[in-house]
Length: 623
Image (cartoon, rainbow, N blue to C red; front, side, top):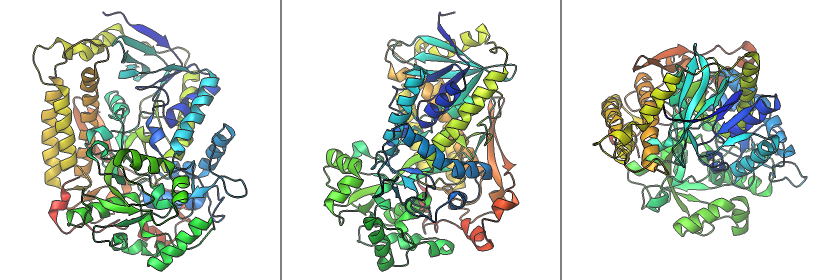
């Protein structure tokens, strides 16, 4: 067997974004030896791309806000498919986690009297997002990294985990390789926390960076963990559509939170057409009312005015833009206009500095003078590893998860800003859960040598082949398949075609050939990433086929309405031998005291269809 490097820790955290850093900090503070493993360099995690803010009911701008309203908004936004306990914990603990970040040195924007400033975001009743201009995620990572480094975490950068090992059904460790040299490293541990993000790179148009290849979900699935809600994939309504080299790059919801207006090529402010009938009372009824809301935002006043239609939930806005383009009312490059140029230039530069520089440098567009062109982009997974709300424990002993790699908090659709508070609330809980579990074990479980040897042979197999195609061709075919058949709008025939294509692609991925050495070989890295992307893509597609209704971010043209029975179940994905099994599992019952927060009218409207399906079946093809 090839020689390999070995390290032993109580807890291994896979992923160094907001959730990973917070989990590692917590587990270390509880006295555990922690190894933090990241695929890229420390500080390059996807969290830095989260711009608009972190959602927490601090009530600094709108005193009416409280955890109960945040809980209600999250449940309504998720079409009540959320795990109620996760939504409750999140709403109750988010303010403390934000204050904790502030105490650790995070420099939030301020109100005139010196408190943390908050802005409006889609689906939130009150101004709830604490922010640092439009660079909130970057500030979070800076703060958490400083805390973790000072705490003495062991960090393994540019290190890719390929397999988790178990001993007697419980986690025992993992195999990885250094991306620089290709040499293997074994991590022996008592617990693993998966915080690896999503799978955006399975799609061609995405806001996600190269690391997002579904690694954590696939690793957990391979050792028997349950995945849930995989059909719910969020398409952020506003990504760049031009120039082609930056297509999909995120345009923060903060633009709309600061008053950005969406118009089609005919100059029509179209979002009023797409407000769900049962939810129209939550939004401004006309331009005059929307203007009153904007005046309050600019002047920093609290207001009871209803928010403008552009601040509808992300799933609704994405479908609206998509439909406008499909029906011939799109901008020249196939999007919609997002306009904030009517505001004073200095305010735009102050509130949205990253967006100003992003468009100037990448598209030669001055957003203080000209509208932006935007369109839907693959952004976020609501689904992932099933976890216990209080501890972050997955269904395999010793395995924990948090952040985008886990599931339950967001239900059928995530509200903007809830992701950043999710990271620190449940990152902390997963780290504490893993540490408690590890401390209760007397000894580190054993990893068999033959299991390590089998995995190293499998990882190196592409170098041994004398024929086979490049992994880049397979990846391109996967992206085309998912964009075309498993996009914003779905139908059974397309989903079945996608499953057939994915089976072919799995065989092609097994036969890819890699040339050159193991040093800095991106083709070899992609060959492994492909397996994970194909596993997660199949889970998304199978779950989408089984959910015969339209709910949240999952829109079926052949089933445009809601099915009340399906509103009470999660689609659960498990490994059955070499096959993938998908079956409904019941949602946990919400306790009476939380049900009482929703009056009969609110509970009835929250699950209403988020948008009318477009008139033509052609709209079933994803962008």
